[in-house]
Length: 543
Image (cartoon, rainbow, N blue to C red; front, side, top):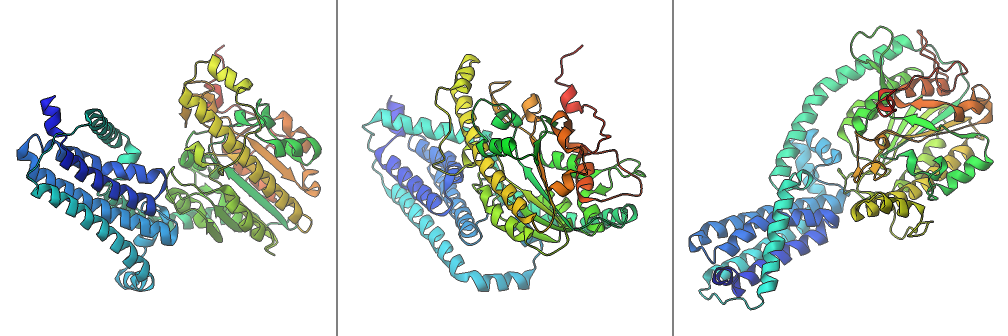
């Protein structure tokens, strides 16, 4: 106990508390959200070492220097992040920032500083003030010779355990560790270099895709039409009441399915992969007839070659998607400039750009809306105040308890279902906008998710899953103007199955795009033939 008393002196505890409070206040004010708490942990190891220097006096100088350096790095990093969030609603590792830095030079940088210098000055001054105050508390403690034993030992012990635990967690958990100063700066630099290298090859690859498309696509002969492709994120159909889920998570889509014969959903639909970029490759890259090894067909290059105007509306920030698929679009509307899971951008921000794109006079239009859906963290995927349409102890809750699911997984399921409930609203409104525009131009609306997630249905965990069916069981919803649906096997859709790697044939059929070498019949065709994908067969009972 004498050792513990020597470690936790009043003077050192006060200095460390003041330094940590200053850092936290700056982080909350400038960065906010869970990211502030993650970045706060960066100061903990140095703070712990400084606490120990009361007991091991030989640590005082190196501990002081380390804490001072850590405070400097933290203040600089917080100032940069706060500036980016305040001015651009962006983050240091977002594709928006990386792309901007990768595509700039010295003169442009100076011009940039000239336009935003008041904001730069404000956040630089705040970072400097925070650092100066922290150093003042640190120097003040170093000059003191008094070491008063702390009285409230349990509180001190709790502080030490708190700092030690979060220090360990923050360095063990990779997403947290990657956000820390220096590490995040090195990642940023590597992203910039990677971006610049990609640009050296991307244009050649895109030109090859365009050439392939131009050689394969026949001149379009169909009348004007609009294709709306809504891409969800991390939505599993098992949590939608439209598909029989006990909780009423899709009331508006349920009502649409009851009263609208033009609305269809496919009951047995599967993604091929359980992560976003891999799923995108299976959905939008495909082999053309003369391919030997790798897919050289890009869906959006084919649409461009057919004469379609492509508008891409995105509520996600993903560098790979921008480089490989968005680059083929005529108009790019990126609404979310925050990378990673901590972004809180509601998907209804896509509705106004969608309405504007639908009103565009182009005769043949493809509008892609990439939503953030229920991308973990689930609690960030619906607006605050959204109330569930089910009770706390409903059938789902009782089954979760009967399956011995942990409280963490049970709460995660509740958040996920609220995210699905919010998605129902966004999808219903996007469909209503498409239907209204179809009075001028016939339209086809399709929604699918890139993949699903596990929410305690098969295992006691939640999140992306390659080991359970929930990671692949996706929703597929369609709506079409009567003048279009009568050309297809529309009434039979709800008796069919779907796999996401066959999406190109569906989109080409809907758009009236014909290739020199016909593709296999799509799910819209009367001649459609089904084959289970590996993502489904691996979960089927063994014969």
